[in-house]
Length: 56
Picture 1 (cartoon, helix red, strand yellow):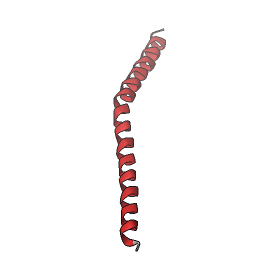
Picture 2 (cartoon, rainbow, N blue to C red):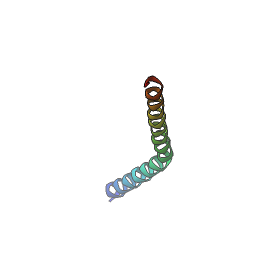
Picture 3 (spheres, helix red, strand yellow):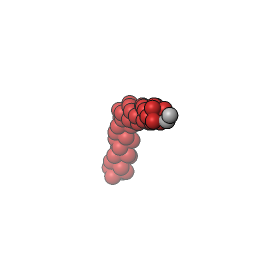
């Protein structure tokens, strides 16, 4: 009975830790997606500008 209780407690603590890590890293993930989207937009805009300057 003690082993079963310990197993359930271990699963509960693991689930709780996973939730905390996930909620904490959600903002970091959003920041990385925003950064890469911003770099992509700037790259596209700069490449169009370079093509416009090179074209006669």
